[in-house]
Amino acid sequence: NAGVMQNPRHLVRRRGQEARLRCSPMKGHSHVYWYRQLPEEGLKFMVYLQKENIIDESGMPKERFSAEFPKEGPSILRIQQVVRGDSAAYFCASSTGTGIYEQYFGPGTRLTVT
Amino acid sequence: KQEVTQIPAALSVPEGENLVLNCSFTDSAIYNLQWFRQDPGKGLTSLLLIQSSQREQTSGRLNASLDKSSGRSTLYIAASQPGDSATYLCAVKDNAGKSTFGDGTTLTVKP
Image (cartoon, rainbow over all chains, first blue to last red):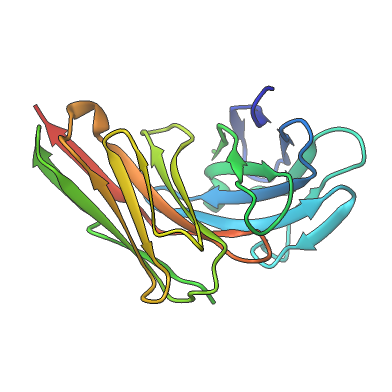
């Protein structure tokens, strides 16, 4: 059973471009979480999705950021019109459910905005 | 709103020492607490997961304890080795499934 997969692992974008980050959960997992880690900081929750539904997006910036988890295919975190402050590592995690179920983390996507 | 604090922010010890990393959280309504290791520029490696009903978990030289009522957890590392050098993150999970992380303790074990 492959682990959580994220791609690309590294992404460089110029200011104003769009960034698309993909997360494929572990097989059988229908819950996906996205976290952002700024340099020298811990991970901060962004959004929680189940298949075709956004459950909690309280940690997501109101503008330029969106997330989806379609019925088929990976979860996508999209950042429009990137700015230098978006440079960070973005991690996704998946689980079989909420509560006691363990989250399994992917290797992260490191976004650099030039 | 849950807040997680890790003390100290950085720790440097000679090889062979036993050490304790601390994690405190403000809201005791958690489902579990997890300790992770993160190497520079890398992802997270799960070390230990403690469910809210448990008091401790052990894996090799690592032992994690949980006192939910006081909002505290400790990670004990026995006989530290240079390969243990990394940042250690503590995360508490709420009933909605999302995790709140501390900012980590960066450990350096000197040979």
